[in-house]
Length: 184
Image 1 (cartoon, rainbow, N blue to C red):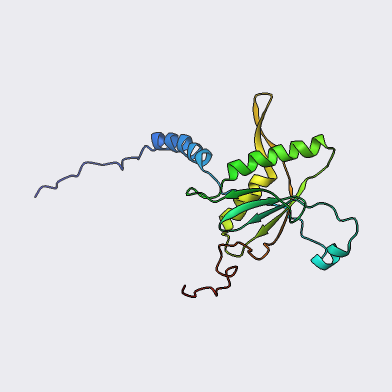
Image 2 (cartoon, one colour):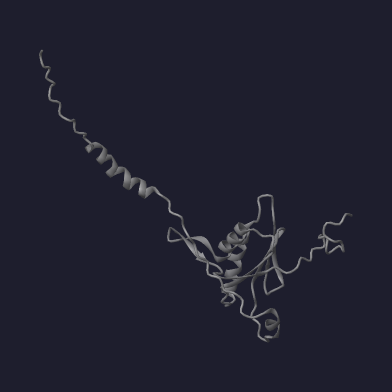
């Protein structure tokens, strides 16, 4: 009987050089294209005095207020005296018009020598979080072009939060003497 000799087969080596070159290029490109989550921190100035203590204060500073309700944005200066009302449209709150008005108001304050950089946001309990953040962004700063660069110009960066006063609309059921949910 004859013996069959098997030919010596050497193990084939796997050439991964081209794959490694691809990884060297691909990994940095993918890492650079990632968008990492951005965390923003908004500094708030909390009210120190209660309303009763503020009423007793004889030299009460004039407070700029933005009252946010489901029906409108209302700007008050001094506190309680309405300056401008922005009703809600089909698209939602008109933050662009509010920003333009606040820019004009800030310019008026500067021309009169009033150094005003604080605002109080008075919020209705039904206002959602995104509306609050959008309002805070709108009253804090606006985009301006300075020397061919787009920068954030300061409006009222010191933001305080509070509860909106009770609604006194003549169209609301409570103002007409009806209980909420009562049939007419």
